[in-house]
Image 1: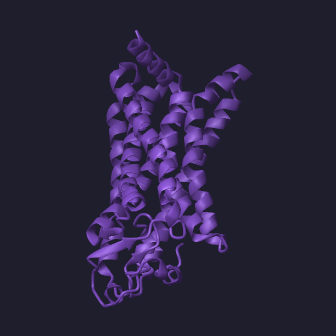
Image 2 (image 1 turned 30 degrees about the horizontal axis):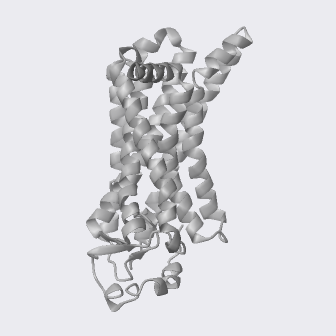
Length: 332
């Protein structure tokens, strides 16, 4: 995680960062100061270009998925409903960070209201949890479709899909709700500078001048419950799926069946590999420059929303065909 001593090391970069107003005692600061990517201030405008591109692709791709599924009655099924939920979650997640990030990179607008900071924190982690839950629901859909195909339509009915989506949404809302409440509860009497481009949970908590172990432990518990348990359920689902696939009589049947869950596997890899890599880097990468940590944290929030619609658009025949048909109609 981010280390507090770095705040002192970057103090000379901001004339106001070490002013008395930033070191006086206060219960809740009126604003925090986001540094963006410390050490790369001169490259902020250039760094914004790939981030802007990722966001534009994410918005265009996810809205395209929503539009195609809405327009095509043949796509009104559990798999595509879960895909729409993932698209909405990705849109909210990426939009939670990029506008403020660009205001830092382009206009040097580093101040963020205390309440706005906590709101941004809540939305980021809430929809990260929702994303993970939706991937579990999609693994369940693939498990039923492959292991019990005759009962797929009776098990995963529209009301059941809606209830699963509601449960995943409520899980994110309830699990992350303590984050801003605990952060608001702590007294802040240190500098109010966050060496990050968004309000990362532990970066905010470390500014408090109190025993914040409750927030730290709760964050670890949530991380284990979400990433650990969700990956466990996904792994169990795919072990059963692989057993069902390898029991098929011919290799052609095995390959064809495996291709039906290929898109979901690629989405899982695109979602969890950056998170696991970032976690390992935070745990063991003590000599890694802080700006690289922050770049990776930003990429973790922007790359998956960009890749999800691309993966499903390229690898899912039904979506690809509808997309090509849409463009062919426009061309005539």
